Length: 299
Length: 325
Image 1: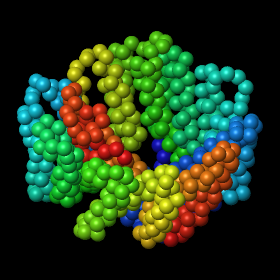
Image 2 (image 1 turned 120 degrees about the vertical axis):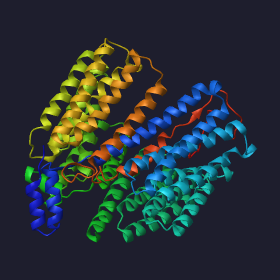
Image 3 (image 1 turned 180 degrees about the horizontal axis):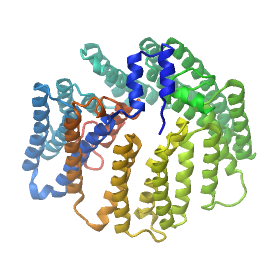
Image 4 (image 1 turned 60 degrees about the horizontal axis):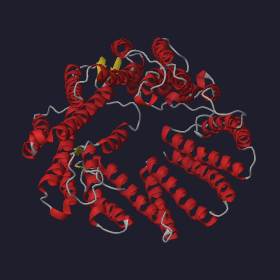
């Protein structure tokens, strides 16, 4: 097994890390300390997903035997139980990483339950898709109550999907609307642990909307310009926050948008299209090298 | 890159080579593959030998970047090397046969050795296993996969100087057990396979061995490999004991959650040995988990399709799962 102790010592001697940090890392290298946090986290996540999947299959296969009322009650009771257990442990100051996944399980069951109830009892009539708004609100409440980014993501996804149904017509409109909602949410958000998740969702929803315009024959140019504008804003923001992921995907989205426009112009000359893609991609790589180098210096 | 330089790079000490972090490397790798693919298409459109020209230009560019600009670990030279070798293979005469998989394996191995790229090396091993699966020799595939897993596990006990070698061994340990599972599925029914009972028994034994090894060696790789072998064993076990899948999933899910909670409780006050200090397999663990959760949200699908608006296959429920983006 690899042991990087000499290099860590050199790192500490160079002043790059404090001696306490070096001691901690050396203890890891010597296997004096071995954290199983990642394994336990993976196991707990897998457990939650398997249970939720099992419940879905059980209901699907035994629907006629059990009946919709019993199923609904059971699912909601299970979801409530998950939240109750986690809440109780949280109040007692005994929450652990497993509780995060018990909450996730509760959220997954809640999603399935709300959707199931709507499909069986048609409470919302023609607007059945509005159950996604209910799910989004419930998940948002749970996310803030339990400070769970995973449940927050479920809420954001439900909200975006609901808007996709609610705003009929162009997909880009619902995507931009969803991005706007998330941006407002981000502005109002007081929990800094959610900031990055909200920002990434807002950025990517906006990019999806812009690319939807870009890949439409009638709105290609305006879509590309909007994509470039959003990319510029996100890259600047990424530099300001020193968060490279923003910079990387904004750059890639911008490259896609520019290529879409040019390829559309050249589309009748296939060899020229490929030649252009070679040149443009090389240029994109060189540009990203420059940006990446600048980012590293900034950090 | 020397072993000393690799070790220095692993901890963040300055070296003379240009490298990128994981995220940036992936993006550069992807962009370079696009460029190579476009170059291949360009030569093809001109009715020239696309594979040959692309391969030569790509390899020349890679070596230029390595020797003149000290690129090593940027993602660009890796993509150029492996993409070019794969392109050269397409230029070779002959009709497609299963043996071409071995050529791709050799290409991956050459690129892996040249660039000290563990992923390419592991890909080479997997392609060799894939060859046996493709020609229908599933017994040889199974034997080789188990052997590769055990050799990788044994290799992990040795102290390696190069991080790339340890990474290669880790990747082989995790990916080798997957190959027999793929080629024992219903899609690859040709050839005679290992009897299911023996398959399950050996994978169960591997699982126990890996867990024990992980505990003794205090290494993440055996635990990761355990997930693979246990999953494969459970899937194949379905064929022997057709227990209702949903109850197996439920039982396994409860066991995993309970086991996590119990282990956490046991280790919570440890400050030495096994601890539960926050850590991750990669820097993107949480993001990957969130993406997987959104993608794998379970849906309740009832045979009678109720009338709902634009629901497609009758599935419903699951936040975001009914969307159409």
